[in-house]
Each structure stands twice: as C-alpha cells, then as structure tokens.
Amino acid sequence: MSFIRIFRMLLGTVRFEAREGFSDRFVNLCWSMGIPLWNVRREGEVLLADTGLKAYKKARSAAKRAGVRLHVVKKTGLPFLLRRNRLRRGLAAGLVLAGFFTLYAGSAVWSVEVSGNRTVTSSQILAAAREAGLTRAVPRRSVDPVCVRRAIAAKFPAIHWCSVNFRGANVEIVIREKKTGVKVFDESGAYDVVAAKDGQIEMIDTLRGKVQVKNLDTVTAGQLLISGLYEKTDGTGYTVHAAGRCLALTNAVVFADGDNADRSCLSAVKRRVSLYVFGFRIPLAFPLRKTCASSSERDLCGRDFTLPLGVICETGYELAPATGLSGGRQVLLACADAYDRYRDALKNARLVAAEYHRDDGGVRIALRLREDIAEEREIVLPE
Image (cartoon, rainbow, N blue to C red):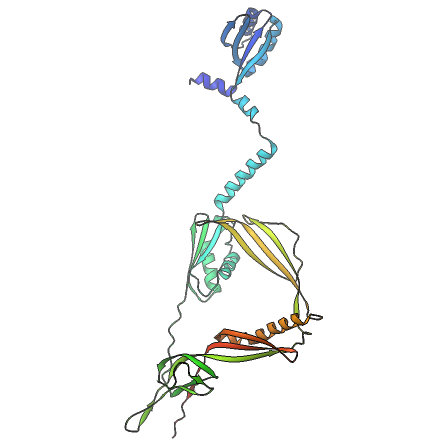
C-alpha cells in the first residue's frame, strides 16, 4: 500500500455519484477550486468519482453552481470508522476503570501468606505485619521488608528468624521458630515417682529408676510408681533421682448449681456480608450494632493463586441476663459454666468422655480424663 493511500485512509475518502446538470462543468469547477478528484469515470449519464472528506464538503458548492446533484455511494477511512464505533458513556467509564484497575493491580500486593510457623498462629503474624504496613492491596513500593521482618521478630520472642519475600504480586512471610531443647532431668538427690491421683495406668515410661507397677494396674494417690532405691545382694543399697511419666485414666467430677442470676446468655445474633475488592470493603447490609462481633474472610483463590477479592462475614451478638429461661436452657447454661470451671485442669489432660446429670437443681459432670499422674517425691533416708 502506497503512502498516498495510507494518507487518504487516515483522513477519510468519499465515493460519490453526480446526476443531472452539467457534469463536465462540475469537474472543471472542482479543478479550479482545488478540489482533488480521482477514479473519475462515467457510467451512462452518471459520473462517479472519489475525493477526500473535507474536499467533498467543498464540492457541494461546485455542484450547486453546475446544477448537479451529488449522492454518496461509499465512505471509507479512519474518521468514519471512529464515528460508527463512537464511545458510549458506560463504555468510556468501563475503559477508564479497567485502565485504573490494570495500573493499580500491577503495582499492589495481592495476597500475603505465612509459612513455617508452629506455635505462633498465622493470624497473629498477619496482624503484626499489618501494623508494619504490609497487607493486601497496598502498593509494593510502600512496603519495607526489613521493617516488617523486624516488627514480627520483635513482637514474638518464639520466632528465631523471619524473612519477607516478594513473588510478583504475592508476598510470602517465612518463619523459623526457636527450637526447644530436650528436657534435662535433675540427677541430684534421691526421689521416687508416685501417683498424684487415683487412676488406671495405660502406659508408663521410665527414664531412671525401677518400675513398681505395670500397664492396666489401678493405683491410688501416693502409690509408688517408680522407685529410686536400689538394693544390692549384700544388703546395702543406693539411691537415684527417679524420673519418668505415667499416662493413666482418671475420673473427676465438676458441679454447677442451677442459679443463673449472675450468668448471661445469648439473646440476639445478626450477620453482615461485605465484598472485599483490592482493599476496599463494600458492605451489603447496614453496620452491626451488637455488643460483640467476630469476622472471617474467604478469598477468591485457585490451586496456585490467591486474588485480593473475597467475602467478609461479620457476626454480632448480644448477651442478656439469664433470667426466665426454660429448664432445658438452664441445664445447658449450667453445663457450660461447669465446663469453664474445669477448663484450666484440662490444659494438662485430654478429655475421654463426659456424662451430665441433674443433681439438686444443678448439674454434675463426670469427666473421664487421660493425663500424666507421675509426681516426684523425695526419699527421706534415715540418718
């Protein structure tokens, strides 16, 4: 394609036909007025020709003087193409938003992932990173990996090493926690290992000392489990610091009265869903006006990617005095209170079974636990 044809396509061309009047005089007037014509030919009494878009507007005056009627046959070129596909307001707004989204998404953090943590939860680490300026939808250039790393390591003493790595639009926080050393037992002194409470032995593991019981034996509180006293054949003996553990099934009973005057119960629950789009939260309901609230996030993710798009579910609830409740709800509330009382004891024990019984207007809970009942007791030697 020649340069002239490209130039004509950019400016636009018009193919027209001239009827009636004096077509020869019309051509002469166009030549005298500087109106370019090309591809001029006659088909019977009709004159066909091509000209430019601006030149066609001037040709109208020449056609009027020659008594010729002009009729457009074909329009080609960029101006007519743009006019046929002119932008609508919605399309223009969509293009602007798409351009803004592309620029913003290309320079923002899409997701933050945590790996390598064991005792410190991912939510705690993400909260510390958020305080240091690292969260989803923030520009990558505004994030200082050194400051984020130092803030996380300073907040959690259990973290030995931390790194913040950028993987395109994703950020990975790698955690290495301090290793806990192997427990070293004290070898000084003379000690026995006895049962701290009644129970049925499931497993006994001895590190030092002489085992006095076996699996499935039933023991009582204070009974000798591992002896630290050894006797020789000649009647003499020596002592050691006995050590070990003894897993046993134990029983416990917790009682809670049925008086709910000082307790509270759940009275109302309301939930709200919001859309999360690149750091902007779009609520789909009115704000919660409850006394307590919790939230959870679900991101739009695939097998190998996570997008900063998702849903945030908020739950709010109110507490009211536990008065005027039915008998069934009073029992359930007393059960919850009894379990809360024994929750501290369950830190070192595992719940095997539980039975609930109503007793004198309250609740009695019989717990079956699995726990370590081994307890060291010093051996008192005669002087």
